[in-house]
Structure formats: structure tokens, C-alpha cells
Amino acid sequence: MCGIIGMASKHEFGSNDIIKMLKRLEYRGYDSFGIVTDKGMMEKEVGEIKPVKENRCSMALAHCRWATHGGVTRENAHPHTDCTGNIFLVHNGIISNYQELKNKLVGHKFTSETDTEVIAHFFEESLKTNDIKSSVLEFFRIAQGEFAIVMMLKGDKNLYALKRGSPLSLGLLDDGNVLASDIYAFSDKTEKAIFFNEDEFAIMNKDGYEFYKFLDNMLKPVSKEITVVKWSGTEEKNHFDHYMIKEINEEPEVAERLINSLRTEQKPGLEKLKELIQGAKRIVFVASGSSYHAALLGVYFLNKAGVEAHAVIASEFRNFYLVDDKTLLIAVSQSGETMDVIEALHGMKAKGAKIASLVNVPYSTIQRMSNVSINIEAGQEICVAATKSFVNQVVALTYLASVFGYEKDFSKIPDEIRDVFSQEGKIKQLAKSLKGEKDIYIIGRGYLYPVAREIALKIKEISYIHAEGMMGGELKHGTLALIEEGTPVIALIDNKPEIISNVMEIKARGGRIIAVTNRDDERFQESIRISAHNKFPFSIEASIAGQLLTYYIAKEKGLPIDKVRNLAKSVTVK
Ligand code: M6R
Image 1: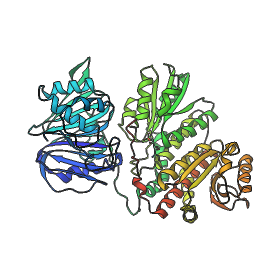
Image 2: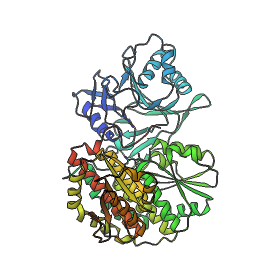
Image 3: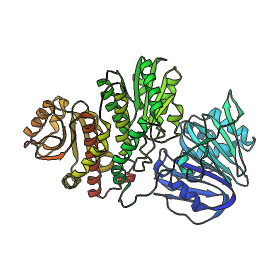
Image 4: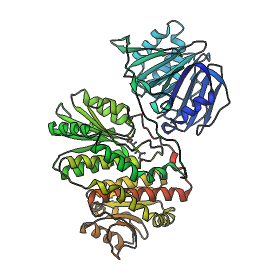
């Protein structure tokens, strides 16, 4: 969360050139944004990134914010500065001991409620008696939490960048250098990038850079490898009203691309993953949000193939799991930057566990931490909601299960996905009738339980309706008490007789059943038709039906959809 940029160039550039780059990081936070240039121009604003006053400059910092400490106000927007106005900085992360540091900065005047501003005052104080390297060293010693910081000092030709926890990369341009939270900010300008490792500090200017590592209480010079990166993504919505519906429409094509790549260029990676699975005593998936739901489905299909595996929510990983050097952790993450997942991996890597991953964003932190990584090939996903990335995670995980004998015909998947769109008209009608609801329940059994949870998550985050995804068999143990006349329940119905019993129990209490099903049954008052008869394509089709329903409910309600309140696409805080 939060996107940061710092650029130094041999040729003058415009403030809006930086704003355009910042726009590519907007998925990291859109509460407010800000920019400062070496020509003295500073602008901050609450809300989406917009063009700013044009200012020609040769160095600039910019930031888009997802609020953690301090409300969404102009004062709390970055860049932050010190009492003298000579230090400017942008920050992604949380300085967890900021209050303690602040208490020591007696006499300093703070103008925001943020943890970030404390960093500016810390450097103001330290630079009174130290040079920059000593001040940075001291900061590494005393700061707790996570940070990617880029700092500019008035009258100084350098930018200073520090990384602990939060991601940071350097792009090498023909006429200068750029620092950014991720390579997507500059991947349309250069293919040459350097990734910061933990506790690294860089001094960068238009002509070059130096890297240091905070190690053994000292800053030691380090040489860095240049990586050639290719990640263009796409920013166009084309004729679609929102990225969400565009990305849902891309699902048949991206699934096909993934299947082809798993059969060809990703085959060696898949083989390596198979070997790691065979050599492990324990296999644990670790993921958050939608990626966790995909992992639950992966576990189901792997279990069917005789491979014992478990899925654990990343933010609670350390409370539940015993890990040793015979454990294989498989991280599932669209962004490859989710802090909860990274934390779980760091802790367990230290215990000797092997790391594998399924990631969408190439060169991301999780991919770089992994012994082997499968790219899910969904392409850039801009809407906060995971849609095409979720589908491709499920395809990749089922393909992995097929390597162990869970045979499926993958060639039909793109067309089976296309079949769901034949239901779009009906889904739009249903959306109209559901837009005023306060609660929606979704039930499924077996492999359809993770799908029920995934649909509920989508409805909550995009349509702002409370939703609960449940195992059909669990209703009678409590939640049934909430079913009243007209309560909407989306039932994922394949060929299991038990789910029909659950549906009848709901109907008997006046509940409104919306069946997502491949069956003809006059007992379902309303239904969305699924063409698949096998589990794997059924799970995908039902998930997409849920995505479309969510989208059209939110559209009916006039909600922001791609940039919903309080969330950000990449969750880089704990
Ligand atoms: O990038 P990741 O897949 O690691 O992200 C995990 C979750 O934050 C993410 O799936 C989130 O739940 C989505 N907004 C759901 O649509």
C-alpha cells in the first residue's frame, strides 16, 4: 500500500511526467497523492491522482497514499517535510515505534498525524551533527517496522533511498535513474532494474547510484545485479466501463495463455515444483483473501490426486503452523507483494523450509524469494477485486493436481468460461433485484465451499453488501436462524443431493434461493445456468457468475467498483 517514486534526470522533465508514472502505482493507494520537485513546487491533494501544475525540474518525488496513521487529509498526504522545509520524503510502510521517536524529537513542530513525518524530523535532527550516511545508519538502528523511503534534501543533487520490509526498485533510464515501489512504474521506459534487498540504502542521482547494506551495525557497500525486466501491462479500459468487467472478459483468453505456457515454457518449473512436493514431508499453502480461496480449491484438487496439503491464511500463519526443513510452503499471490505472505515466508525460510509460489506480477518480492515460481499469466490486473487472477490461480493449481493424476481436459476450459457470459442478461436482472439487500448468504459443499467464500468476498468488497460464504451443511448449526422471508441465498448446486436438502431447509423458512447450477429443477425459483458437469470447470464457472453478479450489483448502486473505499490492490502492510 502506498506507491512511491523518486526520479533524477540529466534532462529537465515536467512534474506531470512523474504524475503519469505515479498513476501506474495508483492501485497501491488512492486516498491522496502528492509531488515535490527540486524547483520548489509541492502539491498535495486528497483523492485520485490528477494532473498538477506544470513545473520543469530535474529531480522529483511523488507518492500515492493508502492511509494507515492519520486520516485521509491534505496534511497527512506525502511528501512530508521537517521544520526547516529542507528535507522532503515519501514513505511506504509503517514505522511502528514512531511515537517513541516522536517523543524524543522535543521542540519539533509536527503538522500531520502520520508516522512518516517523524522520519523527516529525525533526519533534520540527526543531520545537524552527522553526515547523511551516519544519519541513515542511525535510522536503520533505531527504526522499527517497515519502510521504503525516498528522500530529497534541498540543494543536494542526490536522492536517498532506504528499504526494510516494503518493496523498492531502481530503474536505469537512458538519461537518469528512477526509484519506485515496483517496476510497473517505469517498465514502459526501461527494461533495466535493480531490486533492493532487505536493509539496503542507495544514494542515487542522474549519473549513477551506490548501494550499501546495513549489516553488523554498519553500512557496507554492496554491488548490485541489474535484472532485465519485461512487464508492460496495459492501462487501457478499451470500450469497457470499468477495469473489473474488462478483466472478467479477459478470462477465457488468459486461461488459455496460462494452459499453453504450463504445457511449454513453464513445464520445467512445474516439474521442479512436482519434485519439491514429492520430496516434502508437509505441504502448506499460504495466502490471503481471494488467493487463499484459490489455495483452498487447489488443496481440494491435490487431495483428490492423493497429495496431502493444507492451506493457511497468511496473517495467522505463525499462530497455527509448525514448519521445519522438510516443509514446502507454496505461496499464492496475485501481487507477489502481500506483506502477510512475505512475513510468513521469511519466518519459515529461516527454519529451512523450501518456498514455491504462484504469482501474477513477475519480479515481485514473493517470486524472487521462491525456489521455484509459476507465473499465472493473468496479465496486469488493475481493479482492486481479484477476478482473472483468481481464475488463473485455480487453473494453475488444478493443472498442478493433474501432474499428480487428477486428470482433466484443460482444452475445453476457455470455452467453458465463455459459456458463463451467455448468462450475463439474467445476471443483470438478478443484480437489479439484489441491489437493496443488506445481507446475502452463499452456500456450497466440498469444492464449492471455497467458491462460496470467494463470491461472498467479492460481494462485500465491490457491492458493499454484507455477505457470508458457508458450507451448506453448517447452516443448521446456527446461521439458519437468520433466514427470514425473502432472505437471499445463492446456492451452488452440482449433483450432490445434500445441497438440495440444504436448499429445501432454507425454502421452508421463506428464504429466496438463487441457484447457480447445471441442473434443471423446478424447485429453484431463480437460477444462473452453469454448463460444466465436472468439478474443476464448475468451480470456475460459478466463481465467474459470482464476479459478474457482484459487478452488476455495484453498477446498479453506482459504486466506484475499480477503486472501492478503504482498500488497495497490493496490501503491503501487516
Ligand atoms: O496480491 P494477493 O493475491 O496476495 O492479494 C491477496 C488479497 O489481498 C486479495 O486477494 C484481496 O482479497 C482482493 N481484493 C480480493 O478481491
